[in-house]
Amino acid sequence: MGELCVSSVLVTGANRGLGLGLVQHLLGLPKPPQWVFAGCRDPKGQRAQELQNLASKHPNLVIIPLDVADPSSIKAAAAKVGEHLGGSGLNLLINNAAIIKSNKLDTETLETMTEIYATNTAGPLLLGQAFLPLLKKAAQRSPGSGMSCSKAAIVNISSIGGSITCLYAWSEMQVTSYRCSKAALNMLTKCQSLAYKELGILCVALHPGWVQTDLGSSGGHTPPVTVDTSVKGMLKVISSISEKDTGTFLDWEGKIVPW
Image: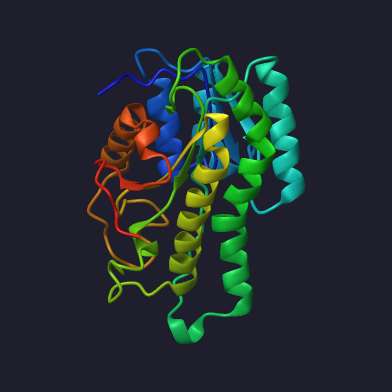
């Protein structure tokens, strides 16, 4: 495994669960990033208290107000990150923010599906667009050929729940809108990988496992994977993937997940 050496990374949905875990582990790397940008909707709220505590101890952690379902919030976040980075680009964008509603097929509504798609699918699309100039700058400034997450990359945190082949845990959780949004996110990842390949930007979809978070436990079941195990695994995968992996759907152990 190669060591993850990123100068700058942005994690969305960073105030709890996997997002907070990613921020904590990034800050704890032997060579932590020069900048860790933690996006969350309410940086000064009670739910961001742990993030605030981390920021008070780590001057390289910058909390960014960011609602991924709000295009104006995304644009403002990109501008703020750009100000901090100065002339350098953003190496790694981790689209982690997601929501779920525990509806069955017959109780799904237009409102629910629209709300979930806005965060889980349209959000990563708009974030990719808004941060593309900074990602391009990072790719251009990085020495050597090929692609890596240390150079310039978009990692979309997806779910095996979006696998049409697998339909993992259907009997436990139908969550149709969530599944559809993640299947669509997988296609978005594939499209991004094709569109951004010539720019030197690697794009992957990553399944973190069924993790013990508020989202993972929302169906009333206890997931088998801890946040710590998932995050360690994902960072190991992120550190090792290269050009051959762009446009793929992998899990936290580096295994290919069926579409």
